[in-house]
Amino acid sequence: MKTNSLWVDAFRRLSRDKTAMMSLVIVIIFSVVAILSWMGILSAGWSQEVGGSNMPPSAEFIFGTDLFGRSVFDKVIHGTQIAMSVGLVTSLIAIPIGVVLGALAGYFGGWVDDLITWFYTTFSSIPNIMLLISITMILGKGIFAVYVALGATGWGSLCRLIRGEVMKHKEREYVQAAGAIGGGHMRKLFIHILPNVTHLVIINASLQFQTAIKSEVILSYLGLGVQGEPSWGTMIDDAKLELARGVWWQLAASTLAMFLIVLAFNLLGDALRDALDPKLKGK
Amino acid sequence: MTRYILRRLIYTIPVLLGVSLIIFILFNLVSGDPTALLLGKNATAKQMVELREQLGLNKSLWLQYLDVVKSAFTFDFGRSWQSKQEIMHMVKMGAYPSLALSIPAFTISTILSILISLVVAFYRGKGIDLFIRILCIAGMSISSLVYILVFQWYFGYYLGWFEISGFEQGFPNFVPYVALPAIIWIVLSLGPDVRFFRTIILDEIYQDYVRTARAKGLGEKTILLKHVLRNAMIPIITYVVIQIPFLILGALLLESFFGIPGLGGMTLNALNSSDFPVVKAMAILSSVAYILFGLLTDILYTVADPRVKLK
Image (cartoon, rainbow over all chains, first blue to last red; front, side, top):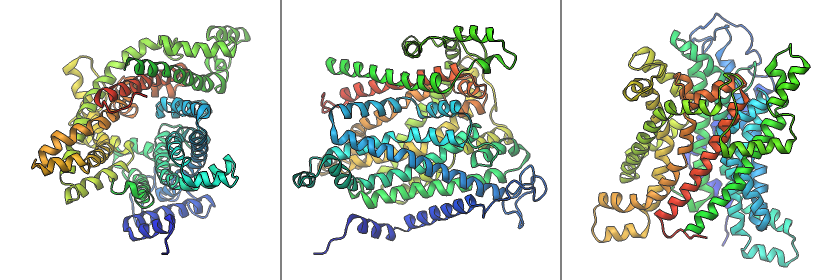
């Protein structure tokens, strides 16, 4: 009988799931927009005065203009670039740390495990928001501090998850078999065990991404994020003063953009969990 | 039992030392010399030396680390750079407004979410279940900033139903000031809480003992309230207790939006004025609270569920 691999099965299940496919399309669109904006093809003119001050949405400016007559649409696009870059970079920092430390702790046990467990317990004992505030305050305002802060706070839960899973796997027969044919520790761990826990990494990444985006908005709102560039958070900060004067479009545009991408990652995360981890199905 | 608690208590020590180490690395090593910032451009060399001595910055790194550790146990954090007040005094002043907002909001939102998730679990798979699940996910996808801004603007400015900013000490006096932020708090927590509690309750619903209860003819309501809820209580307690330390920190954003002079607002003010010792103190205090409540959760866990092995 021909059997399909987990990935083929999972992909089939996903492609039947309309919500998941819609979410994936949204994520792809946002990624493409972010890349085009980064390359300077889209939204390069966000800082230019293109119309009057605080013009409501119209056919010419679908999201209106801000106080300085800049196109809110271009600012939202630029904010997309910031948000997606924060999601990507922090995932690239947090996921490798979480996976490697979790795998080492789970596989070797003993003092390695004690040390790594102590390390993530310590990190997760400082409430996230305090650690975020402290790191950004000390490294100075700016996008770099946001990357570091969110990367540093994001790896703990993944580390714990991978540790538990690797612990279960290391006793399995296929790992013993790999050892019997002469595979060393590193080979057993990275070639044999890790591919079997990758699905957890993927599920976690979609959560990581949306948490990072939400946190970036709050940090930017607090004035700790990007400086001199629009992000969704600084747009919401602008809206704080504008709302009483009836200028709602800047708030609406940034909220809509953030809502779409966070919702897409939320739904995609759920769908991925159902597709890749059938044990958890329906939860 | 006593041995378990004792062991758990001893384990908090390396974690506290670790937290102190991270705080020390951030605030003493990475942050650099604050004297220039504090004294301004026209500082003389003599003033800088004196200030460094006063702040304990001329001690060896090892002794500076010990100072951080000591402050985590004695809660003596020195004085604020901005207001020159004792930080612990500021914390005591800020605790009342913070708790006046967070305790009622937290209690109501927890009870409300448990009730909603029971209803949702009762109608699982039906329209109302799907509707509330969608509402939860959609609600969680909007930034908390947007809720605060829009609610404050609509109910505060536009309709004028609530106080927009300020605080008064004493029980009935503070109610008008915390009412709207408390409502926003509740709305913000309903999404994640209901989603989490629903999962927990549904986990229990497919257990064997529920089937047994059904087989002996119990009604669905009795099963849900008497059997399922009781068993679901353990993860629910864990989830609830572990959130309590964050109440001590207060609601940073809510407090600053509504001008409530609590700990959260104090932390954000300190952040804006680069008042390092206050932020440092709040980081240490909230971590200590987190560690202690983690300990409490573990103990509660063993009390609530004798099956938990006391390894």
